[in-house]
Image 1: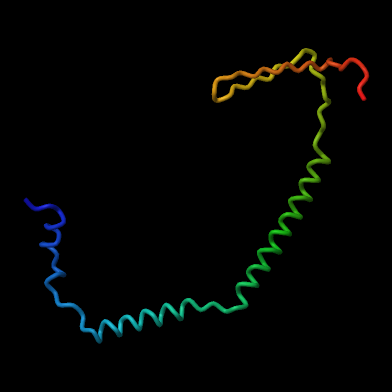
Image 2: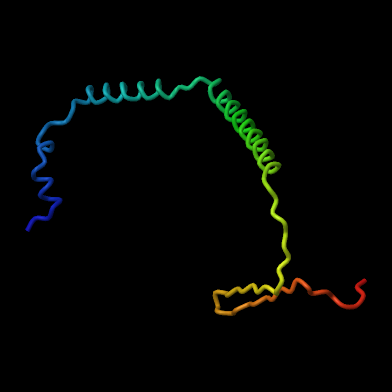
Length: 115
């Protein structure tokens, strides 16, 4: 019984064809390497120019965002603060199952003289 790999190898038409001549293979390799070397050359001035442009854009964007954020802070209405009338509870549960409950009383004052 044949498995898939052996069936594919038996039906492959390329395995019956002769390979390239060594001269043709070497010529093809030289052409590919020359094309890749020519495409990879980047002028040395482009990288610092791109870095400087990105820096200017980032600083300018941050300055604009800061300016508009300041404008929004000045025009936003401020809601009056209202103290809670009753105590507030804050509850936590740890991964081990321990529950922590804090009761916050806004009218709490420490008694006695503190140093």
